[in-house]
Length: 217
Ligand SMILES: [Fe+2]
Image (cartoon, rainbow, N blue to C red; front, side, top):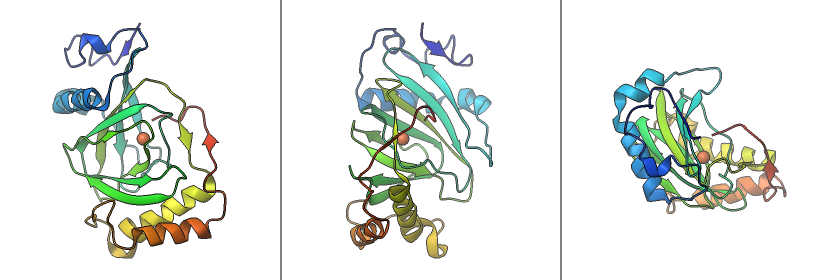
């Protein structure tokens, strides 16, 4: 049986074809449509949402055979560790924002960053690796969907995570640029050099992989 948050039960916010038990994969555009639809239901998610400055808060809204959906809050300065989603497609919609995303390559090296404003709905391919968080000064919140659901996520090894955090500080949060405006993620002047030097400084283990159970999303 699919699991659905009590506040979503009885609504038509999640279409029936996403609530089956069959293990079916849906693509990023379907996921983005779902998170947009849920994001537009302000009265629903705002009644569920909490912000916890000590432990990053999140709760699952839906788990079916084809999709998992999470509502996540981000107090200023809260971030995930760099991670992938185990080969799942993904999408998120920003309902309170903005949030910042550091995008990494397959070897966990940061290659750019983006700021997603409220109502943005970026989508992710199966090999997407990122670190997401709140570089602003006000609480933020996002709704995420992944398909197929419950694939084991992988997290950056310590050395690689340090390099990503260095990139975040150098490009986003450091030097008083707490609300910095991002350059284009793939054309950020100097970003490649910064990422490269940090990755080198962090040692030779940046290509390693740490598998961690749980800890979603
Ligand atoms: Fe993620």
